[in-house]
Image (cartoon, rainbow, N blue to C red):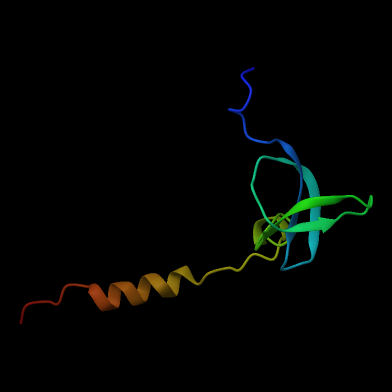
Length: 84
């Protein structure tokens, strides 16, 4: 491998701030924040707004949309007027 052309691949902590869930994995993402992990070492930190612990698809708390009502409102609003 050529030296100096590859990104720095290192352990990084990703933290879902909405549910206070964190996981340690390897990544090339650049960040200025750091956190002390459970092993006592300091790692770069990436803050997330959503992860598998807070996403409705994975949690089973998915909102059901009233699609029938939305379609009826659309048709009512944009339906062609009959010529009189």
